[in-house]
Image 1 (cartoon, rainbow, N blue to C red):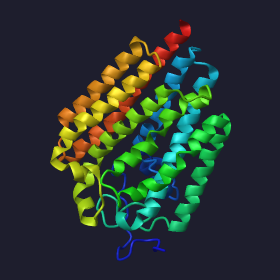
Image 2 (cartoon, one colour; image 1 turned 90 degrees about the vertical axis):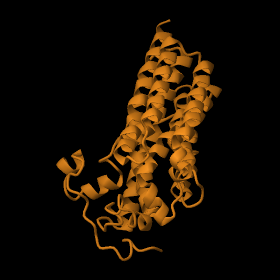
Image 3 (cartoon, helix red, strand yellow; image 1 turned 135 degrees about the horizontal axis):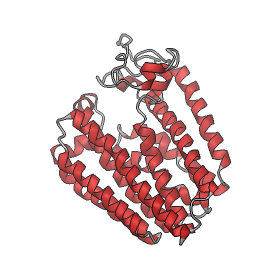
Image 4 (spheres, rainbow, N blue to C red; image 1 turned 120 degrees about the vertical axis):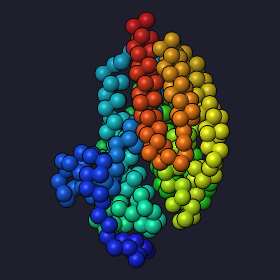
Length: 320
C-alpha cells in the first residue's frame, strides 16, 4: 500500500486565499483540508453534477403534466444535497487513488493528501462520512430511484483509474457525472422513459466536451506523468473535435425533448444552450489555461439556462 504522503516530497502548504474562496476566508483551520479534499472551495463540480438532475426533474414534470408539485420541488433540494455529498465523496476517492500522481503535478501537489495535511486513513473516514450523507438522501427516494442511483456507483468507483487506461477518460467521467439525467423520472413517476436515456446520452457528450477543455490546463503535466486525457489525444485539433461532440450532445438532448413533448420554452432553452456551446468552441485557446478554466466554468450558466427554460416549460404544461 502506498504511503499517506507522496514519497520524496516535503509537505506543501496550499496558497493562502489564492482564489478568495469561502473556505480560506471563513472555515475553521481544522476543517479547511477536508473541505478542500471535497472541493467545497470549488463548487463548480457540484453544480455540474446537479444540473442533469435538474434537467431530468423538469422533464419528468413536463411529461407528468402535473406542474411543480411539492414533491417535485422537494426533489430539487434532495438532489442538491446529494450532488454536494457525492461530488465531495468522488473527489475524495479520486484523491486517495491519485495521491502519488497529484504529488508530481504542479497544480495538484498542494492537495490535502499529497501535501500531508490529511492522511489516507483520515481521507477514508471522511469518504465514509460523505457516503452516509448520500445514503440519507437516497433513503428518502422511491425504491426505483434508489436502484437507479445505486447502479451508478460502479462507474463512479472506476473513473479515477481510467486516466491510466484509456485515452478518453472523460467518457467515463461523463457516464458518472451525467447520471442525474436518469434520476428525475424514477424519483417522480417511478418510470424511465426513452426521453431520459436520450437526455443522458447527450449529457455524457456534453461532459466529454467541457472536461476536455478543462483538461488542457494539465496537458503538459499529464504528459510528464503519463496520464491519458482527451486533451492530449485531440491536442491542437480540439476545436475540430468539439464541433461533433457538442453537436451530437445537443442533437441527443433535442431528441429527448421531442420524446417528452417539450414546448416552445424547452426548445428555446436548448437553442440558447447550443449557442453557448458554440461560443465556447469559437473562443477556445488551448494554450491559455485561464481561458480554458473560464470556459469550463461557464457550463454552469449554460446548464442553468436550459433548466430555467425546461422548468418554465413544465410549469406551463401543468397549467394547460
